[in-house]
Image (cartoon, rainbow, N blue to C red):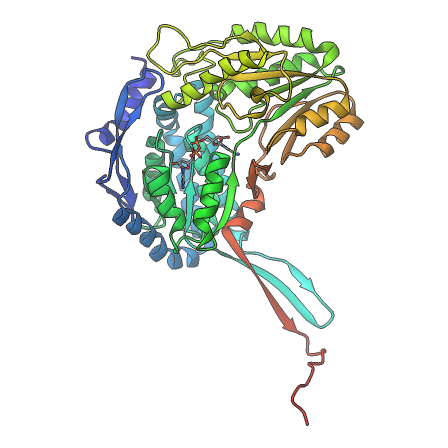
Length: 501
Ligand code: NAD
């Protein structure tokens, strides 16, 4: 066993004797509901069990968040800032443990997770430092009134997250919610629940009052559904599949929930013939094969100008075949296992679909032999058309579909011809073209001559089936807070006088 795997096993050891339960009102709560296994993607073995929250436990978690809300909302923002920065310090102190747990139960590779845990700390620091100004509004003077706005936290919120980079993604939601003065009930994904327990414990250790941050485990259709239907939950921050987003919108409709959705993607990486092709190959490789291809912003469609298509995809195929696939704890590993046998079956099915549709499997396309883990070979489909399912559906694995295009108009048409609209990547050395194509892409985010490099003050989110709303900077506070306008009369206006004889 590697040292890092031993560290991960030791870290989750205290959660595996009994089914993993919940963390409510500052205390662990034993799991009593239906029990399910947590698998280790790298070995296929069972790490432990987790329990679905019972209705009473879900009620208790929401009640804890509701009761803690007035006190937390009234806590001076400087104090919230202090506690959240302390959470960041504790995350940094435990970054290796957190990263190792992500490798263990999410199958993500160490080389990426060691940075992702620290990104979680950055997310806390970024929003903590903005907490004191979060309530500030605008002055909007009119001739007869001074209007000013203020913001207040919306109330207890639900945060529901997926399994692909569980820790980092949850901090991206939970940090601004807590900084804004909201209380939180977090439901992590059922396939990778351990790092969420570490985060909620870190919150308690940092000094969050009981009930401010709670975590419930369980399945989407039971615990997740009850949470999103609960009248005391005022908003839902959800990251996951587009179809789950639709279900959550229906579930929250009765209680008029505010929703923020970060959903799926089928993001294009467009390479024009005038681009820096070395840079484009590096970025295209990184954006689909890092994080085992389980990345919402992965560039899963490679659109290459026809006159350089063959050369470019040949270079890509060579690189894909050289990727180091294996133990996620090995710092040299570039591609690890998929999260779960069900997801593995979905990803693997696209090799058959590609063959049926007449695409070429230029690399990979099969399970990795000789392992009990859920490893699928890094895969490249070439000679694909935008009409094919492999070009339209989110596969969410280390699988890239390469499609030729003729000119700028064709590139834009193909890039936009999907239900999704999260991110677009564009490679060209023609500045005017970069501006035109960036404008024309139906996506929430564009990177020009770059891979996905995040800057926390910038907006993050998608259009079409990829999401509703934006995270990042002040956009996050806008979601977790209500804006109020106050109009102060200058005493110069005339009120219409009614009822005068
Ligand atoms: P998923 O939608 O199956 O599950 C996400 C979470 O929702 C889990 O915690 C699950 O238990 C819960 N859930 C499921 N059904 C529910 C219901 N009816 N009510 C309430 N909660 C419910 O997604 P996944 O398979 O865990 O994650 C992969 C997906 O996440 C991909 O589509 C990926 O693109 C997307 N994703 C998007 C972003 C983004 O920023 N846009 C980031 C990461 C992942």
